[in-house]
Amino acid sequence: MLRRLGRLSLVFASLILSGQAGGAADCSDRPATSRLVGPMIMAGFFGTKASDPGFQQVLADLEEGLIGGVVILGRNVGTRDDLVGMIDRIRSCKCAALPFIAIDDEGGTVERLGPNIGLAATPSAAEIARGSVAAARMAYAALAEKLAALHINVNLAPVVDLNTNPSNPIIGQRQRSYGSDAGTVVRYAAAFIQAHRKQRVLTALKHFPGHGSSTADSHAGIADVTATWAPAELKPYRRLIRRGLAGAIMVGHLANSSQWGGVATQSGGRAIDRLLRHDLHYDGVVITDDLAMKAILDAKPPAGAAVDAVKAGADIIMFTKMSEEDQTSDVGREINGALTAAVCSGELETGTLQRSLARIRQWTSGWKQHGKSKSQRRARLAVR
Image 1 (cartoon, rainbow, N blue to C red):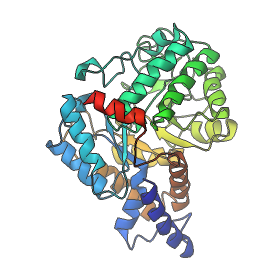
Image 2: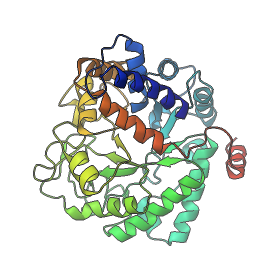
Image 3: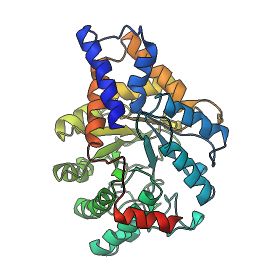
């Protein structure tokens, strides 16, 4: 990833010299522009083993530099051997550098890799918070070692939403929050993050600016929190940012007409620029929640949603499918094409991309692509 970003910096240098950075690229070398936006895309795929067409498709996108990484979902987890086979194939791909291999493994109801493939279970956030921080550190050390052993290098967690609405269908009811008190949330989230850092697994706080008070599930439609959201929901982010524990932050599909306007992950929303960048002084990586959720695709086509997410301030956009029924489209190629066209037309400024790539480069600066710690090697043997 670092080598690839270094090469893309040369592309930016040529744009600056030609007076194009900050405006439209002439796209005389369109493949170069396509590779320029590649690291900003995390794509999903259909399939559970390396021979499946969906996996072969996403692997080709990685090798062409059309995307920067993949997201492994529950639909991709079959047998442990098949999962290991897919990840090993990604790690040995003909890519400029090892891609992001991401998963969301929080524990509890959002656990992709547990007893289903013969591995230990991780408790939910709510259950973890009923115990000591020391016990949380042990549980999360086991989780991080499990992911590192499989060579998963990004865990899209922890959840730092305040549990202000226990009836919330996607957070409270599913036991995904550490609690309603910001101090409690920060203590247990810090244990999660620190355990992953020891294994060189990147993490992302979610769901900014706060999903805990919502009455709707953003998987099913727009979650408008205008009547329920409170500024206190920013406290976990503020404190973790100050402690240097916010390597990346995932933004949810949340709308609030009085606080940040439209959907936070779309160009009508001001949550990233106003709340996160300006008010909380955060200059790290911003990742969107999956743009394939109904909350987004019911309102606009995938191409428009992807471009709007970058306009809203996202550095990495996540797209796992093109529609609810479509399991065959090449997600990475189509989303890359949409962003490339927007850069070439001037709808997206190259200066915006440059800032995003710089943040991604900083996020991965301590991430060693080669070599494993002793604990990782031991864990690898255990998983085998």
